[in-house]
Length: 180
Image (cartoon, rainbow, N blue to C red):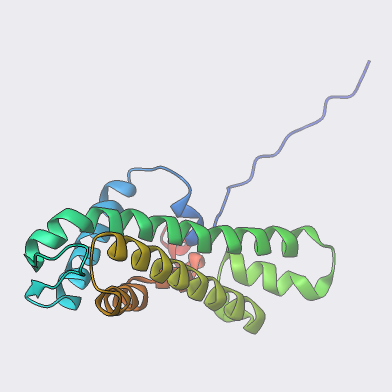
């Protein structure tokens, strides 16, 4: 007769940046909040009457423009955040799968607290910059297709990238686990 093996289940702790991937009730808060922030930043970055390019000669009030395009900007922001978290996930998997002792602090920093390791902090900042760059590129494309002049599209996309970058990637996950 074979010997029975015991199975031990441990709590699964995952980083805050991984929440972008997991559909949860938290999204009921995140999606509307993200939409409001994107709407406000888009609204503030546009002039009162949005001058459109020669392909779209008529100008429109910025509120009407924002009502039409803010949801697309919000979706593009989530796609960019997903890209940044995918980068973090890949680096986290690479660093945690190696047996090198020098990579343990990086892996731990990416998973729980990026401020514990300079390398982890640098990787998280790079992922935020990657997501901000994606926000800029996605929003530039959307705003150009919406008919904004190239200058105005770049200006608004830059504001959106700087203000709405996923700075929450820097939030140490261990803070949340202390409350639980």
